[in-house]
Amino acid sequence: MPKSNSTRTAEAQQQRQKIAKKGEKYGPSTIYLQVLGSGARGASNALYLFTDQKRYLFNCGESTQRIAHEHKVKLSRLDHIFITSKTWKNIGGLPGLSLTLQDVGVPKLTLHGPEGLDELYTATKRFVIMKDLNVSTANCTPCEDFEDNVMSVKYVLLGPHSLLQTPNLQPAKKPKLDISPDTEFEEFLHDNTDYYRRDSVDSNKNVKPKSKPLEKGVDRDTLKNNNEKVLQDLQKLAHCSVAYICTVKKRLGTLDLEKCVEMGVKPGPMLGQLKSGQDVMLPDGRVVLSKDVKTPDDPGPVFIVLEVQDINYLKESDFKLHFDTEGNLRENIPALIVHYTPPHVFNHPDRPPHPTQAASAQRGYIPAAQRCERASRVERSS
Image (tube, rainbow, N blue to C red; front, side, top):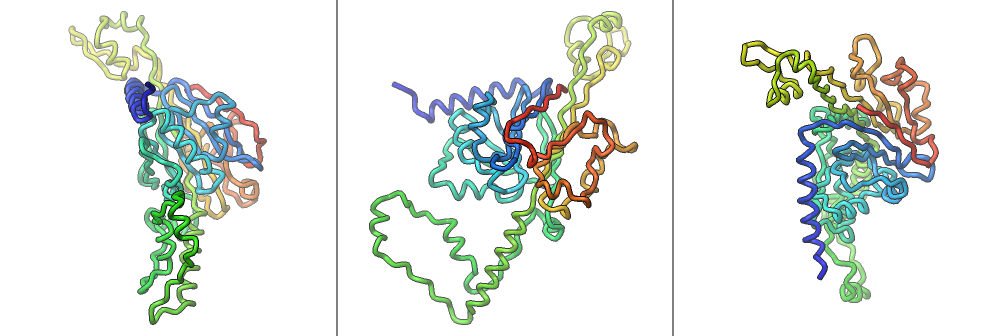
């Protein structure tokens, strides 16, 4: 008799946790980016980050799973998805991908991006059933960074300055009236009616909807104006986006056994301490420095993923630490910048300079909206 889905999912989750624990102590040795959705006309946005331990996805438009399957890209080890903006080209593939991740045993999925990404799952809860997958949203603020054993991610909020000054990009407060202007909208969001039940549909066939009468003292024009104001505020929030400055963890240098023998280090726990960067003391009192018996650490590359919807949203100060200038460290200069920015903004004459404006020709950009639909690969070993 075949196993039930819940039992199979639980076993897959346990297997994933065992594999994840093995790689928690080590940084990635191989990393590359693969463009699954270029954002060209007729194509969605999707950028796949592969490491030998974890997988990450930046934006998840429609047909992301199909393209990943065609190019033999495995999405089963995803734990984090980074969304630049709440547009359908960026989030259209989330419901289907979430169901697939749940089926293969992913216990938790974290969404990074503008506030309100979880509303997509609220709107699709009737047909996207998440019983074994916990979908949560990260608090993407400039004060809080995401970090794991693979990389650290800094959030940069891009949007109207008047909205970014408010904490957590909260929408404007709704007017306090006896009847809230968006009460019906709230009732629509929290509607618990099962529209797939035949009896409920048949019973409501001949029932005409009754309009709710307004209470005394409430003007229809006032409610209409308040509704329009709330709608405008929500539309402003829809223009907000999040840029991601990603720094891959450094790769530790290799231990030179010949130098260890010359220093008098015997096989044992001391070799592991030296490899991890710790200095050790020999029985005769001599101190062996880790840097003397191992190769230098390889700093991880930096790459930026951003989507600028308006030229006024981009501030040079947000990326000043990553400009290729004399005052900044070379390890902070991004190796790659991936743009999901519209062409009219990317080519705007008043656009601030890129962080790598004076960088070498090896560093480049991907103005994704101007690329072809075919996926391409950008590889780099760290």
